[in-house]
Length: 101
Image 1 (cartoon, rainbow, N blue to C red):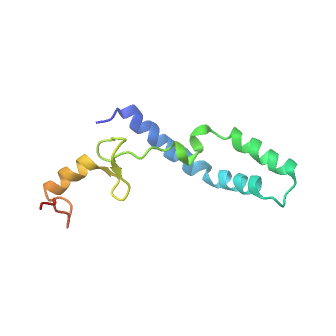
Image 2 (image 1 turned 90 degrees about the vertical axis):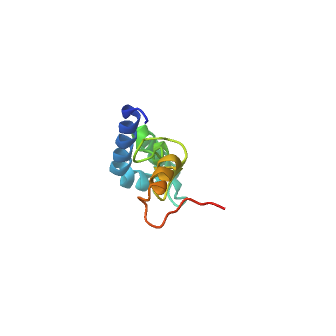
Image 3 (image 1 turned 30 degrees about the horizontal axis):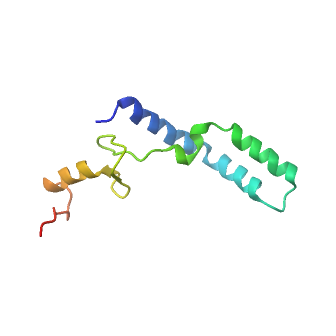
């Protein structure tokens, strides 16, 4: 089980990313538009750099929803490989069977 502070920090980051997503997208569009003057694009870059650091989507860490484990997480299930296997072995995931050959 991961530390509760790490799990909560990641949840907080997700909320901040959602809050600033629209503003960040508009500023990035202005900054990358070659038709605009250089001063306007530079201003957009400055405003973009003044946004909170945790509002960038790359700061979000994929974590297991059950345990908070940061590594070995399947994006489709939002679960780590260990907890996914435990649930599959006990038959709690419909259609998923432990492979054997």
